Image (cartoon, rainbow, N blue to C red; front, top):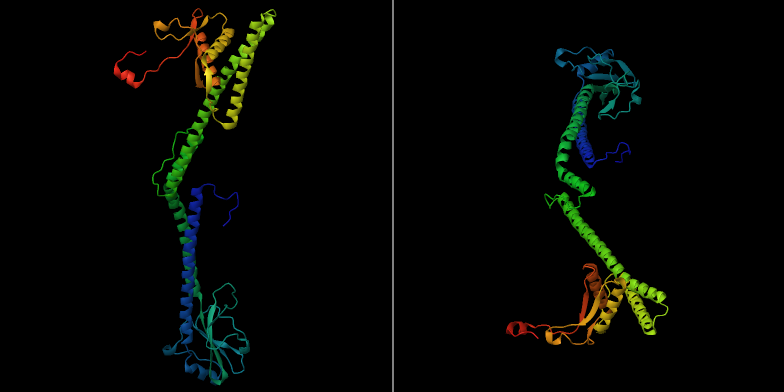
Length: 419
């Protein structure tokens, strides 16, 4: 059934109640219609049985043979008041004389027997005479003596009255059932859809921003319970995805800050050495060559940083470190030179690593170690920058380069002094 758009119910509860009301009312009306049909057929069969077993008294035929007029029956053989008997003579003409005591209009019969569209011995229904809207008559045709034909009729007013009353009863019962189903079904459907209503309210709160809520699940074996479990699973995955997105954004912001800090250091060094070369055109050749070397080194460092950024953008991860022999003394000297450009008032010294007084006066030695020179430069630059930023301006910064022995578990457990 397709409803017009304006009359179509909007909520699921209204649709369920309306559908249940229509189905219940239709079922009641169909049952009443079936009962009405059976009752009318049974009453009609009773009338047909009475017609089939009725025969006019023999005195009637004798009167018709004498003068063509039947005499009134005696009390012993008087006809019931609802019977009507009509006679066609041997010429096939309908006689005006009939038997029956009712004053109501009789059946509509033709004037000639040849026009009777009735089978002998089989009851049929004909309308009432002069009243198209009244109850009909049930008639049967019998053959009489001397080629006479007799039509016996019984009214159907009792049948029509009973079926009419039953019809009105069916309509009233159908209306009562529809009202009862709508009234009681509304409460039943509202009670049955209460878990779904809670899911709806929770979903509305989640839509408003309460992402920490979960859909209540009362019974996981029902359709609403399975829907709640599916929604909770979806919400957990959504919260996980949002957390990953927030974490990724935080890491991206942190990475961009670190990248800006790392790029600012070589840029500042390049700018400082370039200004130094411009401000001192008569600079000695050795110092000029050293400034050019530092500019080239910081430009290469900045190029490496940019390459790492491109690699990170393509791979979505931090670039893989590559290991090679690295001169820590040269890296430390370059980091000190770069930091001195940014902090010219800061005293920064490069010293050997003294582990005990016997080696305190040792000269600087070249220290090589396997590692990634690019990342080591970043570490040294960050350490010097933090030292210059978070210490008083008159404090000196000492950078020490050397090799020492890392204590092992055996040394710690033997009680021997460490070298």
